[in-house]
Length: 356
Image (tube, rainbow, N blue to C red):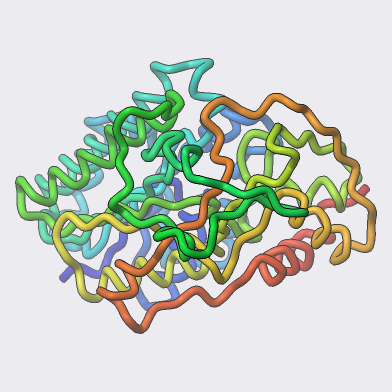
């Protein structure tokens, strides 16, 4: 098996964590990232700072290509050059915001769906045995989770304890007959294509349907990066707008370190056409209100929030993932970070940058 890992979105949150992780394991890392986040979210969202830090820290083990995943010929040429040296592909590049997608549906679909088939085809042609990992999203389930029988508590919405998904939603939830957002639909197309290349061409592919993926490497912006943006707002004393559900909407959050550890487990023992819900589960979850209480406590500052009664279209009122299927296949893996640890990590990593 080859010693090179190709990582798209290599300067983003999951990409950069993957770069560090696999470089530390002794693999040579080829990064593909053209800082589209700067285009999507402006200066807040740009990953330039992260790329500079990566290049400095990783040194010669890291080679960067400012390549657009929509550039089919460019990707094919890169994969042709690397060939059988490729031992792993992690496809983390995406347009990640469901609010943004509706502004430019073509851009969103071309990046998320077409970019993914470009990656799959380059892998099939030049490195068919390399495990292919795709970061999908729980938005493939659309707003189906909002039909769950939720109960309102003091600081959060919650499922009754006797409900089959109290411990977390598993992969049997339907993706049909629901409002996905334009973003969710482009990710469904990519998600299904990754599964299809696995089944049809017998390639080792895995789809990780993440909820809130987070960590100190996040370029936090209002439309993307929930926990990081909560922490940033408290530290910089920015106003945070809470959209709907009384601020009691629940998310499970997985630290980028834990997600990439799952990637490593799959790489070591790959399977064909797997789908995994991936998140913090019952170990690591919070509501927006709970997140602000924690962030204020850690930063020693009050939160400045404004409540907007209108929730975001298709936004989940409650989402906690079940990672039972992944844990059954990879019993040595588990979630190690909970929400307070994640927020503390963000605070420590950014206290010189995020100042009032």
